[in-house]
Image (cartoon, rainbow, N blue to C red; front, side, top):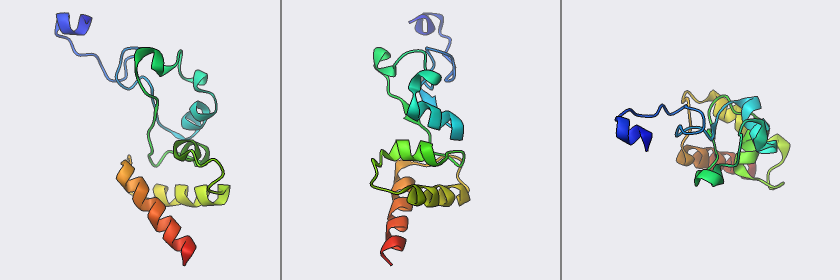
Length: 113
């Protein structure tokens, strides 16, 4: 509301009110949020009607990716580690859902071969 009246945009990374306040990126950071969101979030995003996002990038590690995929044991630790290696080899800085799906399909095809 203040932003609208002052005609001054809010920075994406601004604490509490910025659009990316519940967006997390990076290996240890993502893994920590997956295990216990309170490590990096002062309150649940649902309070503001927002969602938590883990950005999948070259920085993500096994625990973060496992949390994003919510594999619940469907993929072994070895499988997840293999996928992380594939993601880290990619030149993109961040990955779309389509790209993640493509990596998963490639990975599943390799397993079936």
